[in-house]
Length: 185
Image 1 (cartoon, rainbow, N blue to C red):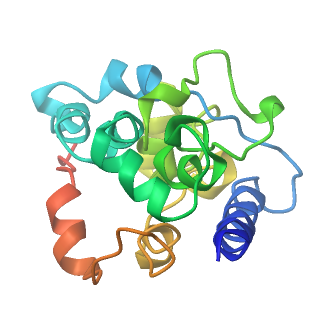
Image 2 (image 1 turned 180 degrees about the vertical axis):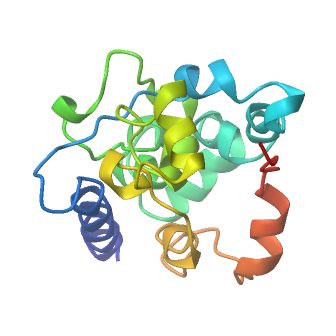
C-alpha cells in the first residue's frame, strides 16, 4: 500500500512539474515560496489573498504533521519515523517537495506547507508586478511564465482515496472555502 501511495503521488507530481515549464520553450520555472506572494497579495485592494491562505488549512499543512494525531495516522498507515520527514506525508503537505533542488529558489521554504504555488505553479517568472499587470491586461499569456489555473485535477492530486485521512472530496464545496477574492483592477 505504502509503495503504491508514494508511486501514485510521485507520478502525479512529476506530471505537474513537467507541466509547470513553459510549453515548447524548455524554460523551467522555480518555486519561490510564500514570501514573494505575500509582498503584493496582502492588501485590501488585492483581496487580502495572503491572509486567506494564512488562516486556512494549507498554510498549516506542514505543521499539522508534528501533531500527535498526525503521528498516530502516520503510524497506522505504516510510515516509519517522523511524519515531517517522511516522503509519503510531505508529498502532499509541502508544495514542491519532490521538485529537484534546482527548481527551488533560495526563498522557498518547506515549512510553509501548501502554498500559492501548489495551485498557481512555480512563481519565479510571474511574481513581479510588471508581469502580473501584463497577465491581468491580457498582454502576457499566464502559461508562458509558468502560471497555472487550479482545477479539480490540481486538488485531487492529494485529496484522494490514497490519503490515510481521506474524506469524500466535494470540489465545489472545498474550493469555495479556500477561494480568495480576485478584485477587478
